[in-house]
Length: 230
Image (cartoon, rainbow, N blue to C red):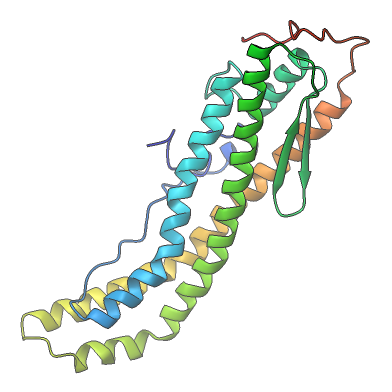
């Protein structure tokens, strides 16, 4: 388990922390005992549930980045990058299209420092990749949920036409209705999910501006002694 499963987890204490925290959980899809419907529900819920799993990995990746830099989970990403800038003068963070983040630091560091820098670069790359994967899954999740909702009446007819015994039928009808209601939640949850990502990217833009405004030192020690763990 990562830091937590809420919208404001492990990021900054800026925009997202002002929002009411929401628990982020997978869709509660119940079995109907009708194979075609269960497969349909499982496939339709998969993109959303995968996005939830990746959100946890994103929280872990952000936490790992902070620890590598010598900071705590409670520190903001802005604090982390500005602190790294003081220790790695040539550090530069870039944000390009499609949520792509890239960290560069220049060269000329000692082997131990170079290893730390490589891990930091890998962490930023992992965060970037996870955000892009989540974004794609959210788009698919909305379309999948829409498809289930539009078929609601047909799905109930499929249950009624299934060869279920008198004990199975009522539960299948009830569970089908329950599943449709779960998919009706997706649109609003995805909007909050998307807002979390947008706020995170806005924060990254603010960090980039702050880094660019930092005065560059006249010299940099090529042996890497300017970089220290906090």
